[in-house]
Image (tube, rainbow, N blue to C red; front, side):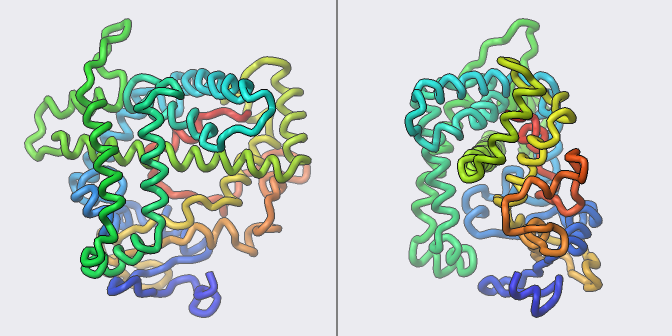
Length: 385
């Protein structure tokens, strides 16, 4: 952000030997995320993810394999009810389990990780066709390993490895995270191989893993759905589908504690609109403008994913500059979500950013997120409350 004040909204930085174009501000970032189509859909080569996924998976791959995996994932999630009523029921079922866990503490402090159990279980139900008991050793192990991997991926050692892979390999900086990833893979292979009984109706596809298995048994001359890529896709879905939503829920709880006046207004609105004992449903959103504004402001304020690197799949024009094919690009979402020209109080938690003069919810042009996320429908399905 400081560099953009000196060099403007489009400039180049050097991450080790890799020249990377950074885009800042609403106009430049929106042009990149919305106005380029598939020309900026590829991912740049990131050393640690190349080692982990070997070009497979959904989020850090490019080309034909990536397109096939992504199209398959979007199609499968839609068929499983993401963004529609079937997933809403799963979310409300999980919410009931979470409330029961919170009530069991009787108002005493509870472990922060508990807030990640419910959204993670919704993801696991989609992936594996079943929810897990919160004390299930597989469930506990998987979430613990995901947390450890996320911490390692953000460590200075891994950043150094990504910028100077030869030096990182010499210093063995990548070994700890690879060991943890292999432990996760072992669990995923077991879950992939586990027999899943047919549910009433006889539909063989009850989960993402079922669909992957069925696809791999069909005509697959390029091996896009062989075991290695099936594990890679599931690994991506597990990592991306648990940590982001769990962290957002934890941040929301912290912000409610820090701002009891906001918490009080949300509770009053929920009590008035829903009444006692009725869980929220997606169709209630229009009647809950303040609660909806708070949920949006949480995501804006925490800027959980400040940037998602892209790579030019073809020569493109951005911000008046020609970017050759293969150029890594960072659309800096933080520069939009904290832009002083777009938000009245960008550095403060202020639900008023999403309310008009009459207290009604308003969409904001500067509320941008990582476009193209296959699980966006799942992350938005959980109703307020």
